[in-house]
Amino acid sequence: MRGRLLHHRPGPRHRRRPRRRRARGVTAECAGVRLPTGGRTGSARPAISCTAILLVLLILPTSVTGSGVALPHIRRDTGASLDALQWVVHGYNLTFASFMLACGSLADRFGRRRVFIGGAVLFTVASLVSAATSDILLLDVMRGLAGVGAAALLTSGSAILATSFDGAARTRAFAAVGIVTGGGLAMGAMAAGTLADALGWRWFFGLHALLMLLVLLAVPFLPESRGAVTARVDSVGTATFVTSLFLLMLGVVEGPRWGWGSAGVVGLLAGSVVLMVAFVLVERRARHPMLDLRLLRNAEFMALCLIPVVVSFSFVILLPLLPNYLVAANGASSKTAGATMLLMTLPILVTPLLAAKLIRWGLTTRHVLGLSLVCLTGGVTWLAAVLQAGMSLTALSGPLITLGVGLGLNFGLIDGAALTVVAPEATGTAAGLLNVLRLGSEAIAIAVVGTVLVDLVQGSLGDGLGGFPAYRGGAGELADSVNAGDLTGPLSEVPADIRPEFSDFVTSGLTGAWQTVLWASAAICAVLSVLIYVMLAGPRRGQSRAAAGAEPRRDHRAPHPAGRVGSGPRPAAERTPEP
Image 1 (cartoon, one colour):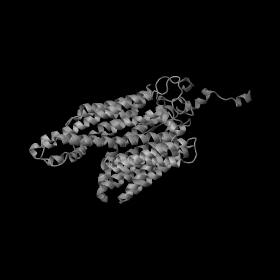
Image 2 (spheres, rainbow, N blue to C red):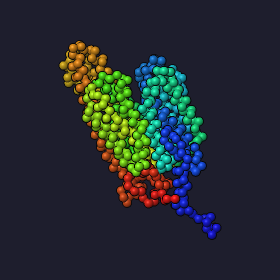
Image 3 (cartoon, rainbow, N blue to C red):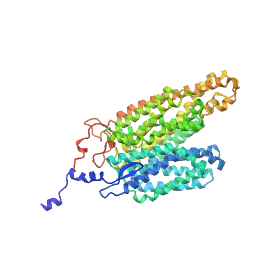
Image 4 (cartoon, rainbow, N blue to C red):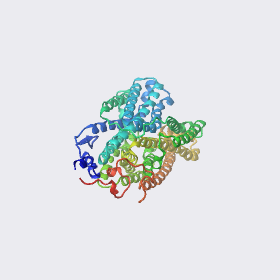
């Protein structure tokens, strides 16, 4: 009997009990969200590591949104040209997006904690040098290096969270991700402006370095994990993908300035396409590719990757462009226009918690994400229907709040769900691919919508500008001015007695162009939302997940509803037996 007991293999019921107890461990507060601290001993390591990662996810969005606010201060101190100055922002954004997938793949191969440390050190050093230098070229280079560090931090940090928590704990962790990331986006520009005005622009970068030093102090508490593949790096695949994405992003960034039909932009985009084709061919032949192309056949994962595209064409395009419209068409001050945008950004601080509660109350992740898509599509449609020159804050508040709620409902939830429907050893790569599509779609949407707005306004104003011979500028110049939020300059060029009529003419053309763009964006969002919701349904009944392109997870513990994208009851094999 003793021999049989020593070699007895416990059944599934007995193997899962320790994991059940772990989910009931001591809890801690992390960014206002209650998280389990870990195992039966109540270790605080997961809470500390989660706090460190959340601090990173607070810093990175502020670096995206705040650096643009610091540009006027940097220009006054360095005397830099406008072109060189713009690369303080572009350099960070380009490398951030371009190195995302490569850093995720490296995290899976060499360890997520190791890549996280490397990213934190690189970001800290680049921020310190940025704060100390007065050379605009060195500042641009350092911002590019900071973008590489940010890519490493975001992909490895997301993977560490996904592999450190399960079920309800993962739901709370990624709800906290949504809150702090939303807070960084909502408050980044305001915090950067306040800091630059009070202490100088150098403190903006210096504070990032100081906060990242706090993150490095928490490194001993971070768990290490990696994928099953530890082969050498796919250097050819990495080089072709990074270069292809860099050329694409550079072409998109410079397209409005150089002209979309210019030889430079066409060459950049063509080179990007050629290198991407080469990347696919290399990955298909590689024994250990940087990106396992089978991941692209995972319908649920790809559906989750498409949600940021809806966000880009509904929410993101309004962040840099709508304030200019409010200044030009409503006569608002820059401060008032910026404050109005808080109607759209502040809900992001609250609604991730609402999403977590909805899941806890029985809704599946698919249904919550569907509600988010309805709000995003409905919000941009609502704005297209009510937009008019001189509209009141009350009329604006409804669609803007709806858009903010829509984004908040999926903030963090997408990341948690996307890393749940892939194999654990591929979480770094999955996080990289998700964020590549997120940042790439944002850059493309802003560039395309901005260009289309200028073209539409120019066409609209060109038809009637001959009725105002006192205005000596051209339609293109006038379109550029009003899209940048400057109507005062053109008005000063016409006699005072015709200024009201000229103002109505310009704002009418501007509003018509905006309505066209918003209706087109609403149509794009509607089509994508239906497609995403269908894809999130997962494989049909009787069809295996492998046949549907989903990678099986190594463990079969019952996930919290946040870890299950589709709806319906869980299979018996996935249910947790009662203790």
